[in-house]
Length: 207
Image: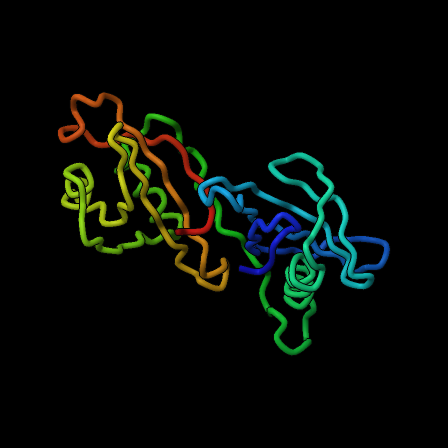
């Protein structure tokens, strides 16, 4: 975790890129904010930071401009700003020599697609199935695992399942980040006969 808001929501640094500004030292930072009360609720954030004045502007959460209060500038967004600025200062100690490319959800994923097809596209795009064998599986979870979907992280009684992937290049994303794929089933009467169908994909922290 890189920081937190005044309300205590964790903030995860995802990526940054150098942009033009009057002081010629600005970066655009992408981050993820997690609801402190519900870890499954996340918001995609973007902020413009000035490396010269160490100030922030144009903070966006899920596409909306917001007033952004940090619990402590040093403990929160300043840590993200410092990381982003350092990564975009060629020649300085610790500076990145390559541009940071943020992992993205592959284009073309549509609701209702067979999960097996979605899975193949994720792997082709550089995502790796996160295999973590649990001590206990429900019948549906075991079925998913036995089909080779070893990235299964849980299923509800309604047939909604969660699968997780890590990005193949650890330097491109924080260690705590994973691609979370949420899938549902077309018909609960055929949970064990048909492949799950894709519902949504989101890049966020793993829990």
